[in-house]
Length: 218
Ligand SMILES: [Zn+2]
Image (tube, rainbow, N blue to C red; front, side, top):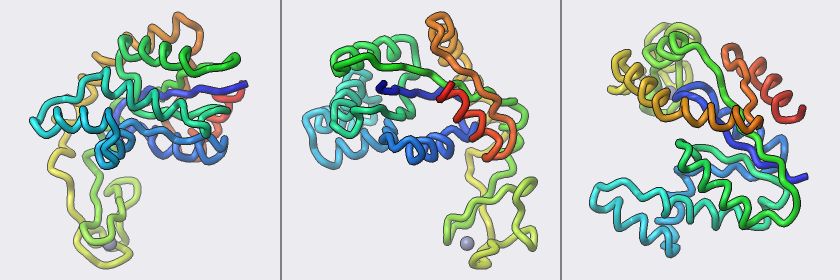
């Protein structure tokens, strides 16, 4: 049966890494909404041109346009057995849009599942405020969990590590608050439908991966 998988979880919860891995493992396309939007703009598809007209004015792309881009992508033949969708939906309204999209595309029965990455916010704040990266080769470090050998410079190329300006505790907490406000209703929505799977996202990449596989396969 076709498997349609979506993912919920706060910023920096490890969702991106895990969903890429999952799409490779299941041989389903990894449909990332952000990349999809950039691609549509670059390729000047009808929706891409529309999206660009908002972006060029510094406005948010309307959700209907984003949904149209997603619909076109999910209707492609490589999504026939399933897909791993990242970055959408982010609200109940968007969840209903996705249901309509699926209905219009699905030929037979499909199994839809929402996986929620449940993670301790304090741990995420720690992760973000200790994050540094190499401006030259892009290697990412964590001064607490994965520090460079000399405590200051990149192990690969010796360049001094830098920190992103918005990786502060205050900004991190504000982002989590926004996320929780927007997403809590969505989690309830899927829970009531009986299609939500919560996984414990505290732990190593391998530990979370094992839990993710279980949540997707059971
Ligand atoms: Zn480096």
